[in-house]
Image (tube, rainbow, N blue to C red; front, side):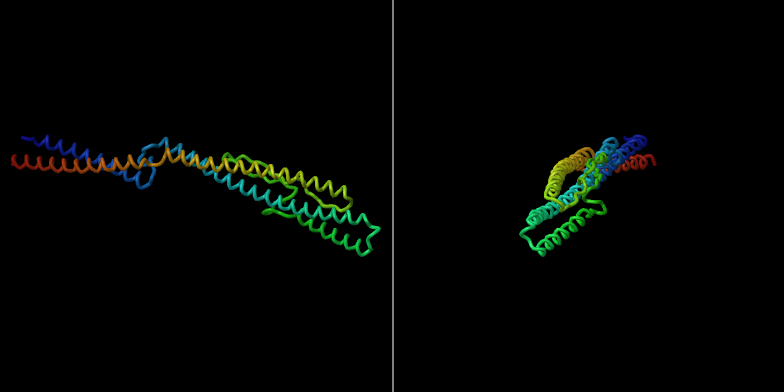
Length: 253
């Protein structure tokens, strides 16, 4: 016959087993509901590594957005240079026309001079154009282009001032505009390359962090089912042990 002490021990062991099973169920439920593997201290080291990796990934995404601002800056400056190029071309046409003064009337010469003045005014306005408060032409702009916070300086070259003195001076301005456009094209190409790299880094960092910290849903689901069965079995054993203990006590009485 089962003794009272044996029944008590059985009930105690069954109770412990039930408690462990409930703890396992709670862990599985927490990991499944949050998607975080490190819940209940499951992977503290992995959680720490994932936090650092995710921080780098988010920084890479911000760097890509910063680069987008830099690209917008250079594209705006580039459009201004194209406008200056068009104005400068018109100045050259007028200057060539004005050199043929012997065939022009005084009114013709005045009209040419008036148009040149308007072109120079437009050129001066373009030189003063700003991008969110920063000078578009003749200024430098610092942009963070990677997840470590490294700065690169974007330059829209020296200020280009239109002049209508001679064809040679106008041609020199054309050369300046061409060089500035070439530098901007190179800068835009470099920024787009950095931006693509940052988008790729952000995606890779996030994927790496997910592999480390995200819940293994198949495993956690299996654990939930396992511990649920163990809990039910343990509770049944607790009930049986308690019944056995009660039966022994009834006989003794």
